[in-house]
Image (tube, rainbow, N blue to C red; front, side):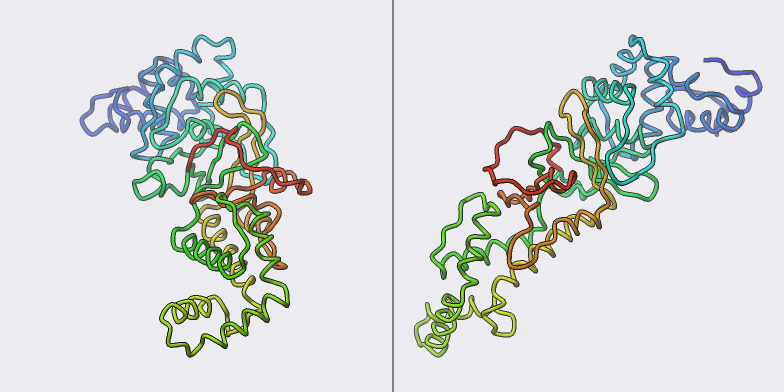
Length: 357
């Protein structure tokens, strides 16, 4: 690393103990400030050795407390790569891509960096693509510290300035796991569906696919069913039978203003609210298509647009909502990202890779 006597003296002067140390992240930050002030390419520092490189990455691209493993191996891989100068330039540059809706234009060197990061690094309670995203957009990876301490609580994977990004990585775009729905809203949704199924006689499949839910909605939306339900409620309203009393109370809780015609709309309102609560915890959703080794595409979509595109109405689930499996919401990526028309629904396979956030 080329450092003039003046810069070395200034660095020593700004260190609280007067001792310079490339292995000390706080002192490395001071050096970075001095280099920036003097217009010196930061790559002159980060490509000097593996330890300096590691400290730089953790300081610049990781939120405090976030652990990233394998950075020295990544340094060696970059240093042995024929495109190492371009790779170090991307990492050391202060100029990144902007968060803009749609498919992000990725260069070959962007994709090469992605492959190297995925191969040689790991992010505690996160996914290596978060580090790549942080470098490309000049943000900070924070998957492991972006929630309440548990992986299931993680909200933001990467912060870019004041913007929070939830990042997903899949091998294909067909079915996207958007993560867990809010616990309270999820319990309410499943309770409603169970009661709907019991009183209608319609069966729901265990994975709660959109088609099975919509078929149930079709059944309980008919005038005949709603008339039968109203008559049944009238008959058991004052029944001394405790079982009938509990059934009456459970059903009445589902009927806004005692209107049986609103029985489906109550669920639609709940699912829309649950999705909104889930989605707007961050500002952006980033969808990587590629998987564990390579990247093909990167899509960015603002949270408000995600909520709008998943909004259900007309007593039917939105075509982009594929299913609710366990605690997780699954989305049709072709509809959400590419605005394709819905096709025949298929059962969920597990042929995708994602970060489980």
